Length: 190
Image 1 (tube, rainbow, N blue to C red):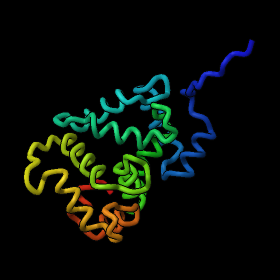
Image 2 (image 1 turned 45 degrees about the vertical axis):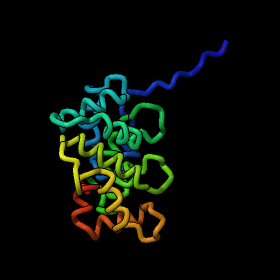
Image 3 (image 1 turned 180 degrees about the horizontal axis):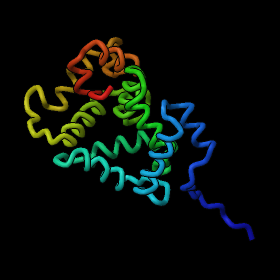
């Protein structure tokens, strides 16, 4: 009788994993090992699930509501869409949001906002993410210019170069780079 192979994730860091991460980040062997030690301490099975992911964000935003934002961020970082984030996915996501040049970091922000994963951000997706970001930082005032739907409409009107009421990755990156207010709001760490 053939036994099914389980999709076990190894908690041991291999030379192949280190080589992959080094090829795609600026981390040294030692830094990768340190990140791995912390990751395995927090995720002994080698996988970060949505619940633990939200717990980590809650440490950085203790006064905010992290659930909506974390759902979208988790889905962006779970590149193989298996419902968990492996160490490689985790560290590559950290590197992309912290080590990349401005275009690379804005591309990651775009991927986060592109909820439908169709290569474009529409007004509804943008409003959803603005609302999630407000929840994350504990922003209560959502009236007038701060209304997520109004803000999304204004941003799309300003950045949409083709007039299709959607933003491509190129429009998003270009718009964020040329408008410091939009950049700060949509991608503060980029």
